[in-house]
Length: 110
Image (tube, rainbow, N blue to C red; front, top):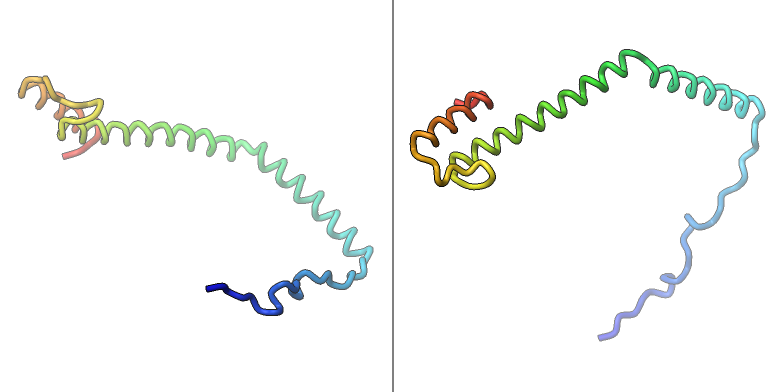
């Protein structure tokens, strides 16, 4: 069964017709340029701010700390389940319990 498109399907819509050229007002153009300069100065000053640098450094340190916490939690889970890099397969029951207790203490798990 062949489908047929409507007779208007090949015509472009009104959105493809360019709109009228708006008049350029000098005072608005000048006002916009001054604001752009001001915003660029504010951005440059903000990027050099000691407070921002402090927060970025703190964020980087938190990111690493959080990444390590997540890795430790996965290691604990793997040890309990006996899978993955922290698998306790091959350990004696006593060594396994010590290892899991150490991981629980490290992660703060109960």
